Length: 381
Image (cartoon, rainbow, N blue to C red):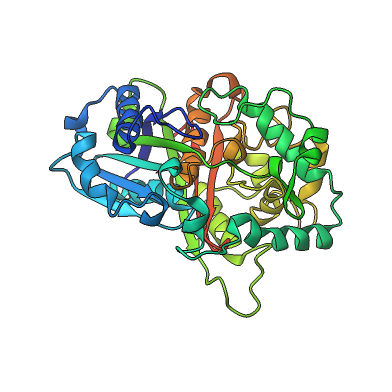
């Protein structure tokens, strides 16, 4: 039987457009130290470190995990690097949880980061070639296909953009703070990739997030309420195989089905209290609501329109402000996992959902082909 795993420490850095007040290593150390402080631990308690970030080209630093060992204060400890495109933060947390569940280590610190101000994001997205259209250029056709298939009205995307930006006002770590955001402001912002307006798109952020994971004994004696890991899953599909549906990818469906089965969930909308999902462009909220089983195909946009995904709704989505408000790519997936854990620990602050007991953390990456998810709860499963 696998060892039970719990999140007992979480630390974030202040996400911003340019953290010119701190180095990449300093930014990561800041998040790691805050996670250790939350867990009431020091580096001497940590058995291993799992680091995740986007490809080296994003910052132009080769194998950053090597020099980060010294910078973090983790010299001499086993370090593993994970990379699965934009889903890497989620995949990194899953790998760390497996090290505990398999009894390889008792206490693992996992860290994900990105410092995009020190690189060129669009250059990296195009693999170092000129003329790249960026992530939005790739996903815009999928969004148009979803709108055409579902018959969703054109104001649904802006509704998501407004909801998440208003949620971000409650999160001191969120990058974008736009107190006067409105649907009209979103629609009047420049069209970047039709039908995606500028304010329906995520920012490029600098930031890091870290978590301390431990076994059942560590979770039971934690200084603060732990988040118990009820299930984890990752899935990948080729981005170009014939018949692939990038609007509703099979890998995402299979990944969510797996993690729900592990957690004993048969109706995610009824049995989960909230979800932190990877929404880099506003229309991906209704698209992922269908992919993750919260709504039937073609019905996801109705959840947004009805207010079900707001903080006052029956399935709140991205109470933290989500990727639309903070997007250090290599860390964005782990931020979703960490925010889900904060909610079930009751430590999410102003964006806390009262009585949250079970939550989904979700990440995706690449050509909507890499997926990582976990379900965490306030009680041990």
